[in-house]
Image (tube, rainbow, N blue to C red):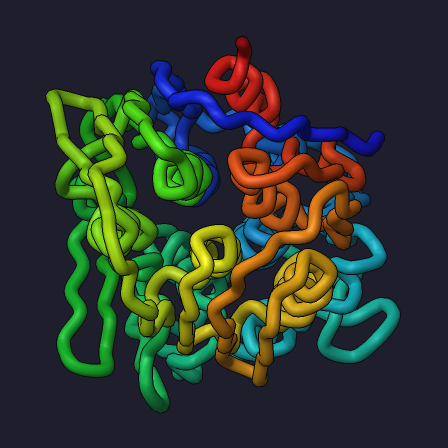
Length: 403
């Protein structure tokens, strides 16, 4: 279903409750399988989290996680240690094009029994769960942090824990720190010194209620709305000043566009301050690549040039996000170039109206372009794709832009 967004030019005010972070939710759901006395509050309602819950509860041999990339990586590791279980893990057409070989190789080095059913290095895969005998693994640090987190999440269940050594420079550090932070919160001993992470084997934890922080990636769209508005005051609930989520860098980045962030108890208040002569933005997003689309669209909407780097992981997401951004921003009138790991946008003076924005089966494409309704009217293709991470997105946008 396509969705037409009418141009809206009034002040943006309101209070929004975004559900729990997809990243934190899925990590805790895996850990809950090992520690049954772990309770989870404010669990995210994203498609990814729901596919994860269904997969973990399923007794079927065939597990289909559709577009849920996090679930694919984390479940590959989890089913490897689910003894005496045989699982075929598959997904959507796009999921079968997303590489998983580096994670599978790492798990095999620990003793996992995994085989490919179609194309070498890609899902679907057959996993026969067993007791992994080794406790040392080496992995390229520049790969998706989800591979690394998948290994760390099963580490407490291994007989001798896990010693993970990085080769090369580590990227997406905040997501690895998030995983280690959650382990620490549960009382699971871990350390990261130089290029080695160690996680101790842990048979049990004290009774624990883990409260999932709301998703900072989802908050990015409200930062964009505030930046593109003439006047805004938006309150977002269930956020922490000392967040485990790398995307919390938003509070710093959006100061560049005149958006002030105030932390009040468990909420953040976004306010648009008067800005003049906005400067070009240059930023390395290697630790927060999921907000690249939002930032690029914000810059375009404000007529500001930007150079974003550290984006190499965007090539293997739900779509090639760099090429998708180039395609749709160009339709709107942008001058933009992309490489394998960067995006370069020139300043613009005009935005084409009533353009149909293709989403390429990518939830972040739909949500990143939505704030442009403060500048023009536009149409979003397949608007329901937002359910992957933020099912209530359009309802919440309506709440802020209702006359």
